[in-house]
Amino acid sequence: MVIIYGASRCGWCEKAKALAEQYRLDYEYRSVDNEHYQRELKTILPDVKTIPQIWWHGRHIGGYDDFAKEIEDTLNNYAQEAC
Image (cartoon, rainbow, N blue to C red; front, top):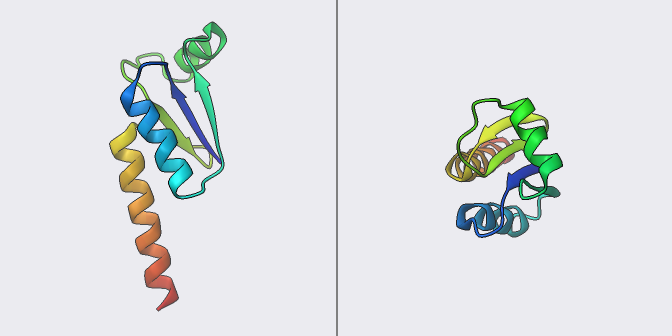
């Protein structure tokens, strides 16, 4: 499961959701426009300055670029294991 903390009018947040959808990953989007999710994110990452912030299987991945790289690395590992 992927958890994406993001906000409205955030292009990178929209790209992160689109990437999860493209690869058919189950994800939950938590908008920090909602005060509850904003506090939740600040509790988990007190010094957070950017969004999106993404977790995959309970592990903090980082932002969009980190998420894209993680997907690429995961797919490459699956391809190598299949050989």
